Length: 140
Image (cartoon, rainbow, N blue to C red; front, side):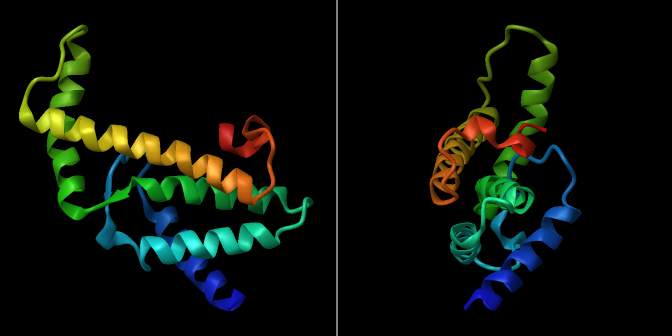
């Protein structure tokens, strides 16, 4: 069972290594395994780590948090389409997004942010980290 978790996480790690920084929503279809399988594998390994495995623990937690950015393919497309409008609005300070595309993108992005916060809390709980602020590598 642990070898399956290791294989799942290895495949997921390879994918993460190929992703351009700055993507805020990625299609679920990019994942080499189901989101649930990656979650379960990550939590299984986090539970078994020893305190001296801090670097591996931090990497697993980062990957677990990043998993929230994988959304339904149509939502990832909506964010991609709305992102251009959001970026141009950022240049014009003070303007509120009002196009349907920008609003749809914001809804997905806000849900991703919430899911990332929830994932951090869950992973830290499983890894027995009392104060998530001490996860040094996560702050880079």
